[in-house]
Image (spheres, rainbow, N blue to C red):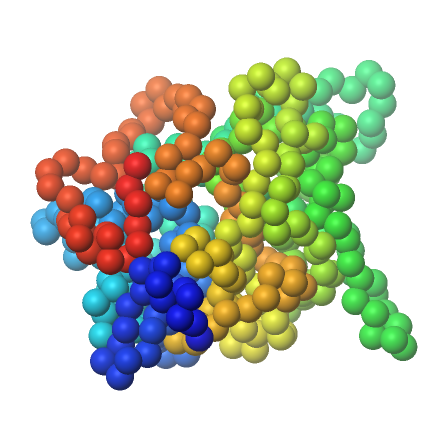
Length: 373
C-alpha cells in the first residue's frame, strides 16, 4: 500500500474506488491461466528506462499496429503507464494475440519458458537500433575443436560474438537430498567466472571447448540462470540458490584486458528479476517478477493481477531465473554513456522511435512520473 509520503512525491494513479496504483507497475491479467511467462517478461522490461521511453514516445503506425510486435508492445506499455487507468490493472490479450500470430502459436495461452520468450521477443525487436544500444554487448570466444584433450599444442581460435543475454551455469545439484533438506547455494561471482577468459566450458553439442571473456558491456545486462534441464520426457529443476547483489555488481573482472579502455562504467544495480517456485513441469510451478519501481525506489512483487511491496532482503532470497541489471551511468531520464555499436554489413537497423508527433503526450508522461532525455 502507498503511504501519504509517497503520494506527495510520486506520480500515482487512483482506481474508481480510490485505490492507489503505480503507473508502470500494475497487475496483468493471466489468460487461460497460462500466461504468467509473458506477464513477468513485460514487468521486467518496463523497468528498462530507455526502452520504456522509446516505446511510450513512439508514433503509432495504424497500418501495422495490429500485427507488429513492437507496436503491440508499445500499446501495452501505454496502457500500463496510464495514470488515468480507472481499473488499476491491464489485460495483455492484444499483445498476446500478435505474439501468437508471429510465433505461429508457439507462445500463446499454454505455459512457456519466460527466458525462451524473452529471447524471442528481443530478437523480434532487434532490427531497431534502440534495442541494440540498450542490450547488445560483445563477447570474446576462444574455441578448441579438440573436445577430448586440452594438450598444450591444441589450437584455440578467437572470435567475437554479440549477445543480448548471458547464460549462467549452475553447478550440478546433489543427487540425494540430505536429512536436513539442505538447499545448496552458490555466489553469483562464482558463476560469472565462466567469463574470466580461463574457465574451459564444454560444448558437447558441437564437440568443442570454449573460453569466454567480455569485450563490451551494454547499459543493461540480462542474465539467465540455467536452472532447467530436459531429460527424455521429463524436466529437472536445479534448486541451487544464487547469492547475488542488489547493488554494485562490478563486471570489470570479466572484461578482456585488451578492452578495459572502452568500458568506462562497469558497475550495475538490479532493477528486475524473474523467479520460479514449485515443480518444473508445465502448469505446476509459478513465475513471479520482482521489480524496482524507480520513483519510490521500492521493490514490488508482481504475480499476474497481484502487486505488493516487498523488502529488498526478501528479493535477494528468491530462486532467480532471469535478472536485469542497470549500469551505473543510466540516468533517470533514460540517457546513458553511448558506447558505439556498429551494425554488421547488411544488418538492418531503424530507430524504434519513428518519426512524427509523440504518441503519449507530455502531460500524460508527467502524470506517470516519466522523464524523457
